[in-house]
Amino acid sequence: MSDANTLKDLGNKAFQAKDYDKAIQLFSQAITLDPSNHVLYSNRSAAKAGKKLYSDALEDADKYQPYLGKGLREEGCCTSLACGDILRPSPHTPMVLKYEDSPALRKGLQEVQDAQAKDDRVADSGLAKMFQDPNLVSKLAANPRTQKHLTDPAFVQKLNMMQQYPKLAETALCSDPRMIDVLGVAMGIDMQGFSREEGSDELPPGFQHQPPPPSRFGSNPPQSSSPPRSSSSTSKPAPEPAPEPPAEDVEMTEEEQEEAKAKAEALELKTKGSASYKERRFDEAAKCFSKAWDLWPKDVTFLTNLAAVYFEQGDYDKCIESCEKAVEEGRSLRADFKLLAKALGRIGSAYSQKGDLPSAVKYFQKSLSEHRDAAILAKLQSTERAIAEAERKAYIDPAKSAIAREEGNTAFKNGDFVGAVKLYAESIKRDPSDARGYNNRAAAYMKLMALPEALKDAEEAIKVDPSFVKAYIRKANILHSMREYTKALEALQAAENADTASAHTSEIHAQELKIQQALFAQRAGETEEQTLERAMRDPEVAKIMSDPVMQQILQQAQGNPAALQDHMKSPIIREKIMKLVNAGIIKTR
Image (cartoon, rainbow, N blue to C red):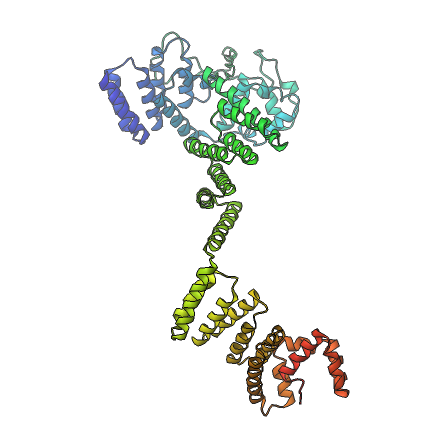
């Protein structure tokens, strides 16, 4: 018997590989060893049908019928249909696998049906073509006479079978009077006069009676492989088809029923919890979400919602605990990665609220590795900036800043300008509010001829301390080196305004004289048109010259130079006039 099973398994593999000859040989050897095993006949029948040997397949289908118990003979009807006897459809096809759920039988029947459908799915007549209308079902549903037929699952199944196998149309008209109504809808005419009552043996006028072939399923199985089929119009009326088995609902096990009930209750609690959360009744919401998880621990949103409640309550430790459990359970349940990312992101937010910024960054990064969310990315960047700012503030120490600045001064005097830059930079980090560090580093940059960096440091020193006169003078020296003489004069004018104690007057005047000389040298031999053209390349000068008020003042000054002094009493006008003087547009004696 074990050898027969081995041969059957080998035959199944050959069948799956579509090696039907080898499959038939192996199933035949197995039948020799175990002739009472009806599955072997079924498998060999399927293999023969795979080779399109439908008559031989029917013979095997008939042979294994005697081995089936009472009530299982309908299986032969399904096999007969699958093997090509499509003129006699069986209503019991759906019941076959209920009684014999053999993988080989299931596979074999499907293969046979596919093979036959490939050959025979062609309508031979105009009558069959009417049933191929893709909108037929919708037309039947819209017709009051036929819409009631669609409530019968067996009728719908038979209609689907006719659409798949057009040859069934002629036989179905004889066996089921409801098909007359279907034909009328398909043709667009009223077939009421041609219809007959269900159960009547009288055919509608114009249709020839075609009785079905004799049954193969009597008490003695037939011996011939091709039983005769009667085509005489004088034979007895066709008997009513066997009643269709009622559609059976899939019964749930007791365990499945309990799980379904628990799931429904859990989802209802989730809805209640969400409503309570929106109304800020957090204690009630927490109870609902917690109970929902206890009832049906297969939806991690119960835990993430519970974590959201704890977050709003300020209980960040419980929030983290709930989210960590959601991630752990979610991985085992293969939950959506977006849910896992959401839980990890909420952990990061909880750590951020606790002030543990490094842990917050860690979990924000984990969240983004699961799913890249713009909101989480913004939180990560904000937290990283906060960490950097905290580290910067923690590094501030004015005493150590002074030490680093003095060391920088020593390096500067010794000609080590690169070392001086590094030490001044350390001084700035230790105390960014001390303008001396920026000003000293600007001097070191000048020695290294890094004039743009030097100018930036001088301007930063002025920004930190607007009254720092030395920073203005340093800026003027840098601009002089950059041949920006007009801007250098403006820097000196700002230095003079900031030097309220006149402590740097001589230094400012000396630098101003030096710059004026450079300007005269630059403008020597320049015509008025060339001077104006050069000055107008400065955007600030161009803006002043296009100002209607300034244009009126300049016109007035041409006729009355003393009037210009009166206008310069206004600080804003004075600044603009000095800008034009420095640019060479207004000449002074």
